[in-house]
Length: 543
Image 1 (cartoon, rainbow, N blue to C red):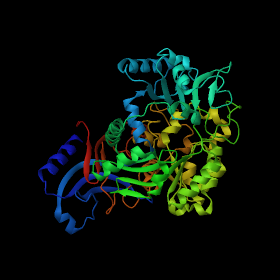
Image 2: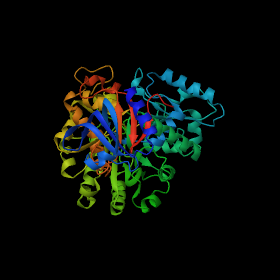
Image 3: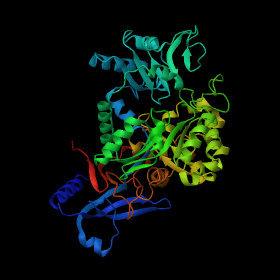
Image 4: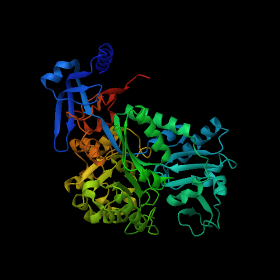
């Protein structure tokens, strides 16, 4: 495979006037939404960035390059990620994946020692479900690091926060102010523990010093570099504010955005109304805005997902609204009138039912706007057919299942789990299933998502047969969900999602044939090259 990359670079560098490339002797796969096709060559124009018809005229202009039988795939989409947040997670404290409270504390201590002048310690990634006992941590754990400097760490799913005593003090959170707020966890004596759920997190967030514009640019550039390296050429950014909007716009205008970004406006962001009033935006198919992110509930791991019946492992909890149905209804009516797609976060079965109810109203015009349910995680089985019936897209994240399988059944019980992470039921019902990761909640690598979709196992091949393996996707379905289906979900299927003449030359070179290897090895796939619009944006082992 290294040979191919050298040939491509040397040939393209030497034939500087060769605008058309015929990459032949390859082994490629592409799904057009109806069937999987195999390819033995690609013809593309490096100036226009388009894939071309293989006719006599176009081939006569082309410089032929031998692909030496290497494996080519369409550039992969992530239908739900957070680019700025991921970049910042790489610059701030990141305790994701740590399997004990002690190791998390140690990581924060090391960060504090390295950055003693920072006024706050800020980070994310903790997950108590991975720790022995699976109990939420407390402010006193963080007080071991500092009682004088505020510390604030968001949970891996972004739906809970962990504060030390100083951060609680700054936020004015104490026994009295927290008394009637169920989203502030309290101990047996009524004292706040330091754990805040969903909307309560704003009580601390509003006091955190603003991140500079320059640091946000640095974070976004770092994120894009890493995203290209794992084969992502198109990311649906699930909730952007004015800063991200401006940064992506400027990068796209200057042709310095080596990825395609489908930005969902965060309806709670500052100046959201002004951004909505600007209408649709499309800068050279690199930065596209025509959708809005809404959110009805929280996450399953922090008991924030709203359920029809109490949680199976805590009958005192039903979850909680982040935005009530009435609030979402009012916002939907405004954004649909403006011609925007609605992408609504829904995790719990009640949250999903209520979102589907709202999006299925006739004037939502979903056949045209393609409204999406983001996560569609725990569904009543009786709601699944409604996705196809009402032209709704199920925007799911396969690695959520393999991350959550250690607690999901505890949360929802044996009956409700039948509609949870129910991908095959969605496919069988005719729904458009688009896949992503929700990074930085999960890792950015889409091959981890393809692996989880097909095996429903972790990287140790457990559990045997897959967790509720009957809901696994076929590899063809999984590839479809990460390419053409995701492109459809972004109104981009006319130029992205498959390797067809007339579309953009977004493709990747990988080191193994996914359709010939053992499914358990899919996650090990390495990306050797990433091409966006006929230009190479990533080459493995190059700085």
